[in-house]
Length: 351
Image (tube, rainbow, N blue to C red):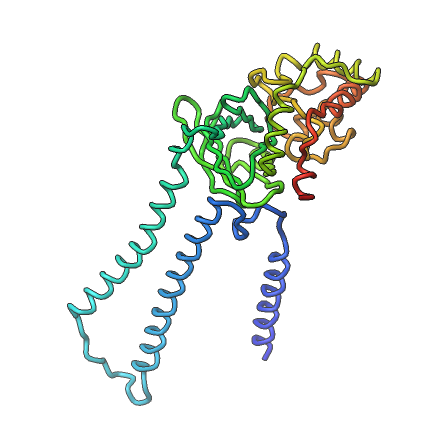
């Protein structure tokens, strides 16, 4: 009785833990809730895999149960040795052919989906959106080819339209992954560039992550894909093209922050269409939903990030204590006024 109660408690514990863990997660990051073309393909492949596994499991358990019952040792047969059957040609063929068929059932759609997701043939069509994605330790840069637009951390795309990505890295191997709308693709250093595409079915903000271990802050290398309507995307493109990096902010504190930023930060960062430096492009910074990809967009968090970046993201290339806290507050005041467009993640979610 005591042993039975122990097993029951263990079973109850695992059951309760499973229920608790099933409630964990973040919105718009689950591959089990596909909201894009690529994620839908991968979800269908998962269903095929699960169906095959269940089929094999049921057949094996049925055979196992039959053998246990049919050939169990009976009373009085303790020394009885059943007739041994070897080399049954029919059985050999069956359990060789069936796995081959099951592998083909899984392999064919998998290969088709792999080539489909990597297909970049539409990138040459008129009106195609081509974006160069660059992975860095530990942030992401996006260059819209032909648009003279550069941004970091937040990737804006129109919904219901295939967006073509070319992937590369400036340092180590990273992996671009947006679970809710696409699969993942490695970004490699050097000339080996991969391609993939994105297509979101609904407007909204989708969380992306690096899926390749790339250093001590790998788990903090987050980014966001913001899907908006075609009209909003066109407006966003127009607004980003007209960014004036020299525009003066309204408040005196922000103007002091702009001067401090230009003197201390512009050697690594950029505003407008300037090429990416060692650090992220700061265009439209005030509309980002996260600071450094992981912090809530508050002035306090931004000041803490400017002064102590290595404590928040160990191993990143941003120097610590480059400015003091008073100077960091002025820089933060300036950055939080870099609002270059009315198209924001919040407006996409509201739609």
